[in-house]
Image 1 (cartoon, rainbow, N blue to C red):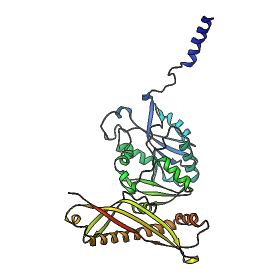
Image 2 (image 1 turned 120 degrees about the horizontal axis):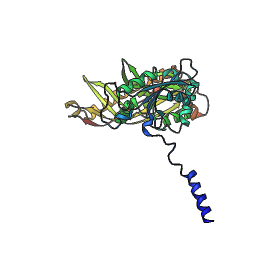
Image 3 (image 1 turned 135 degrees about the vertical axis):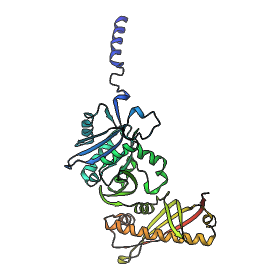
Image 4 (image 1 turned 60 degrees about the vertical axis):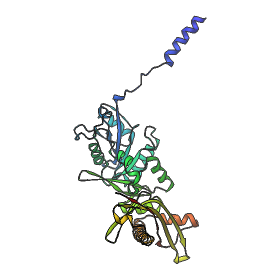
Length: 362
């Protein structure tokens, strides 16, 4: 009886201890670091650009090596991300893997197609290999061309934009970093409304700044860096922005450290006014004797007034442009407060700027 039990136990181990027969070796994987998503030419599917890192250079310190050994750009088409990956796997000797993807770039043509955009966003959200912290950006051209240039900028890993945001952009409001999880959350909470950070390619150079404004899952306007900064003030998320204004023949930079904004409505019927009241606090940054003497009370109040008027002018212009392009943010604010449809109203911006200190660069 004991021998029979031992025999059964040994046979059961053959099924339990299967080993690593299905394990995929590291060198057999194509680690996609950057992915660009465009609409296919017939608008019936997707063109996906997979930027694959070179394993041979991941352990070295050499950055760009002149583009000769740049990671391969695998371009594939399909009616879904999954089908495009299957086609891509037929074009490379390594199995494409999205578990290390750091950046996703959405092309302009995709952002102008609501059905395609919603479809790929749903697939990205369901894909267990893609991290919710993956950085997302939009471009005003083809994502394919941008991803190709990104790989040339960093021939070892293709992590050019990821490294930029990691070391620089967290301190700049105009290039605020946005991850996939946050992007999907904003779209869901705001009925398809969000601003994608803009990355553009001009004369084979990558430029960061500005944004792509989405309304109802459709691209409606490209925002300049100033317009995106003003939008961040409206949202109360302007920390890191830098305002510059001329004073007595000098350019004075103000680094914003705190940003708040209140939106309120007053009046009745046709006399309703929407008051936008941003409150910005920051420090004067600069060098020289000008910035060592700038904090007399009289001069500080004068500068606060100058910066406040600048914010009022630029924010009002941005709001009027956004409303002309179909932005209904203020109308939504009215509905939330009064639970009814908003009547026509005018806008008045009343900004307050507090200069809290000075940073002197010797």
